[in-house]
Image (cartoon, rainbow, N blue to C red; front, side):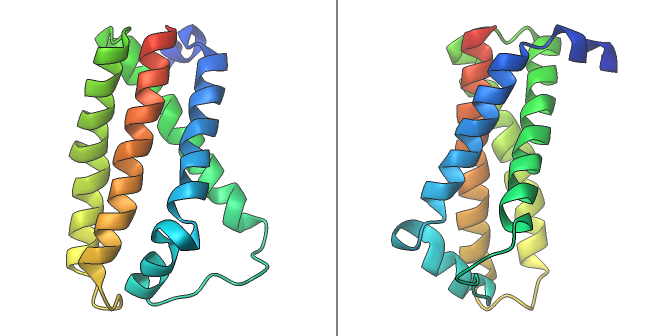
Length: 139
């Protein structure tokens, strides 16, 4: 695989998948869903008026992850909804969950590190499944 695959991506699908992944975060981290538990588990509070970076950085990371999943979908020929779901699960569990698990396991600063890991990795697993499903179905 090379970076040449970037020219072959369906960029409209990438943008839609990125927005869906990011929008999931707005729901997932809402106080009524996992937001309050996530803040408590992480030992911090989101300010009432967060800075723009609070939204820009997560959007850019969703975009980057979606581009990479798109590249992997192209390289593996994942071009159906079912194959997108499998790709999303593989990247979500195999990369996002495993990286967050080791991070949480060795983070003594978080009051409830494993709860934090469950919430954050759950978001990324579901978000990557959604993104990869859109990419797979739309290619």
